[in-house]
Amino acid sequence: MIVAFHDSKIWLLEITNISRDAMYIHAGLFTFITVQIFTRGRFGDKRMLFTVIGLSFIGEIVDFLYVYENGGRYDYWQSMRDIIDTLIWPVILTVGPRLNLIRT
Image (cartoon, rainbow, N blue to C red):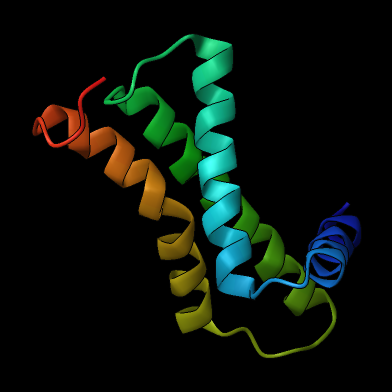
C-alpha cells in the first residue's frame, strides 16, 4: 500500500506536468471540497478543515514509511512544506467566512 501511494503520486506528477507544490495545493482543495459535498458542510465548518489536516498528516506518515523502508533520508522541512501547501485553501475557506472575508 505504501509503495502504491508513492507510485500514484509520481504518476500524477508525470501525467499532469505540474510542480509538487501545485499538486499538494490541488489535493488539499480537492479533499476539502469532497468532504464538503459528502457532509453537506458550509464554508467555515471546522470539521472539513480537521479532516484535511488529518489526511495530510496521514499522507506524510506514509511518505516517511516509504523513505524509511527504502533506506533513504527523510526531509522534514519538505514534509512541513507539503502540509502547508495542502492546507492553504482549506484554511482560507474555513477562516474567511468566520472573519466575513468570504461570503457564503
